[in-house]
Structures are given as C-alpha cells and as structure tokens.
Image 1 (cartoon, rainbow, N blue to C red):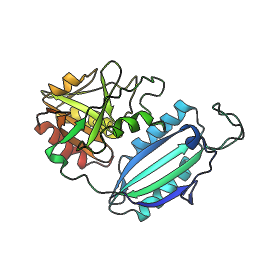
Image 2: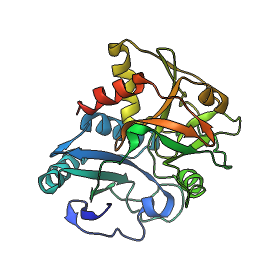
Image 3: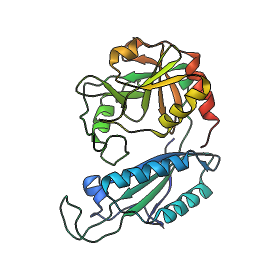
Image 4: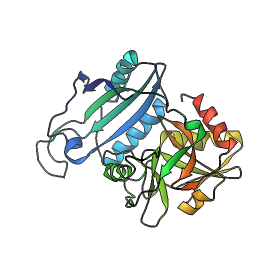
Amino acid sequence: MSDLIASWVDGVPLKSVPVDDRGLQYGDGVFETILVRSGTARFLEAHMARLRRGLAVLGISFTDEAALRADVVEALRIAPSLAILKIIVTRGSRTVRGYAPRGEGAARRIAMLWETEAPAGVDQGVTVHVPAMRVSDSPRLAGIKHLNRLENVMAAAESLGGSAFETLLLDRREEVVSGAASNLFAVRGTNLLTPRLDRAGVAGIVRGVVLREAPRLGFAVTEQTLTLGDLIGADAVFLTNARIGVVPVRHVGEHPIRMSEIVMTLRTRIETLDA
C-alpha cells in the first residue's frame, strides 16, 4: 500500500509546485524519507541534521526550519499507525533562468504523507539484483540525499518484473556503493563491514544507527571497500534504510548468502529505537 494521504507546499495543502521550481527543473534540493510509527517520526533529529548538511553542501539558504517542523507536527497529527513522511527543500524559484542560482527567491519546503505497510516476509531474507549499470563518482555530493537520483532510478528499473527486493549499486571500479534505496553491510565473524561513502552513495540514517549501536552490542564496524566477491563470501549480508530498518539478504543475484543471528540481533535492537 502506498497511498498519498496529504501534502503541503510551504505549509499550504497542495499537490503541485510552480513549474519554475529548481527542484523540478534541475533536481536542486534535498529530501528526507522518514518512517512514522504510532505518531512518532523515527530518528527525526538525525534526518533534520542530514537535511541541514545537504543544504549546506548545495549552498541553499533555508531559514524556515521552524515552519518545516510545524509541517511535520501537522503530518503526525493525521498520520495512520504506519506512514512515510517525505520532506523536500528545493532552492525554490528564481527570476533568472539557467543553472547558476542567480536572482531572488526563497527556498521552498514540501511535505508529503504516505500510508505504508511493514515489508512482509523479510525476516527470511531477501534477494538483491545485480544490475548491468555502474554508477559514477561524485565526491562533492557523496553522503547527502540530494534530489538527483537518476542513476538509482535506472539501476532499479533493471529489476522490474523480477523478484528482487532491492538493486545493488556498483561503481566503475566494481566496488559496492549501496542498494538503490538502502545501505548495505557484510558480516564477517563479529565484524560488520560497510562501504565508505566518500565517492558516491547516501549516508543513510539507519546506517548511522547501526554504526552507533553495533559496538554497544559487541560488534566491531569498519567502513571499507567491498566488492561483489566480498558479499558472496561473507557470513551474512543485510540492508538498512528508514522504512525497512535492518533486513537480511538471502541471495545476491544467483548467489546464496548465509543467514546470521547477528543480523536478527541488530534488527531486533533497532526496531526498539525511535531516536
């Protein structure tokens, strides 16, 4: 289920933005996808911190965080027991056409509330598709959740019609970046390994929670280069994102992946957290 419940543009109930909005024109903005559970926006402060980092990288001046938080409160007021809240901040509209952000205009905030359901059957492990497409490096934008997601769209499109739960992203060095909509970890003994995100990819919120919580559970975490071979030979592999939490991987392409109690321990721990 993925039904739009409500949306707001600069605090006004609307389902459209001006045609000259730079987020629409150029993908000039950032976004956050937040799981709402029983009226609580999970990991909200981490999401807001990443939003601010992204805006700073793009050089977007945003002075309406208080108003955005009021939009969040309004969304939570009407949210069902499980929902997705997506917030977007674009550079807004400008009086001068072109890539360079010249001319007057304020940043624009958008909030959308979607009904959702918990993913079914994921405790038994999911399949990750390995696409032919390879993603490019973009160190200046690495880690932030900017609106330019065409590589993710094209990679995910390769798995349409199949049974894969997620699509793997590899770069041109054949190194693992992430999933199209998730981050990825490999388990080796009691060590968790996850790709560095200094050249591409998004620093996911639940990825950050795993980096924080794993040592508290006695597991070491290392950010390092990973290849497809590293995943296939791992003791376990799992995905993370705000909607799914921690999900074990059972197959990478046609390659079976072992299951581990470590993954389920992490999944259980993170399901108890909202911050």
